[in-house]
Image 1 (cartoon, rainbow, N blue to C red):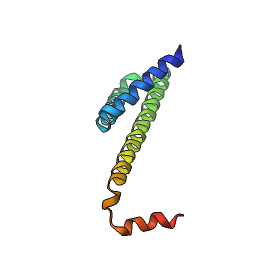
Image 2: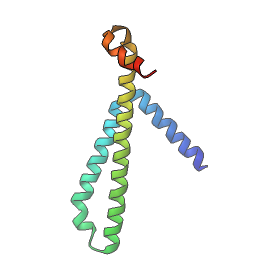
Image 3: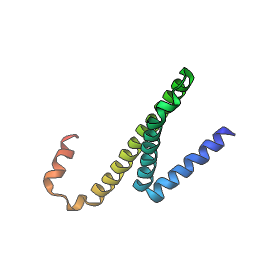
Image 4: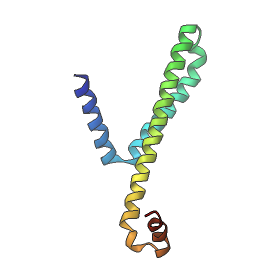
Amino acid sequence: MLREITAAFYTLDQWLQEKLGRPYNLILGIGLVGEITHRLSEAPKAVTSMHGLIGSALVLVMEVALLIHQIGALSHHLGRRGAGRRRRGEGEEAPAEAAPASEHH
C-alpha cells in the first residue's frame, strides 16, 4: 500500500513538473525558505526543554534537506531546459562551438 501511495505522489510531482516547471520548483523553494525562517524565529519559544530543542533541531535539519533537494531539482530542471534550447539551436550555433564537442571523440 505504501508503494502505491508513494508512486501516486511521484506521478503527481512529475505531472506538476511537466505542467508548471520552474514556477513549481520556485513555489516549493519559497515555501521551504519561509517555513525555515518561521521555525528559526519561533525557536526561542520552542526550546524551553531539551525535548523541544531536539525536536526543533530535527525538524529544521529535515527542512534544510528538503530545501537542498528542491534547489537540486530546480537546477536539474533548468539544465534540461538549457540542453533542449541548445539542441534546438545547434544549426544556428557558430562553428567554433562545434569544435570542442568533436575533440572528445
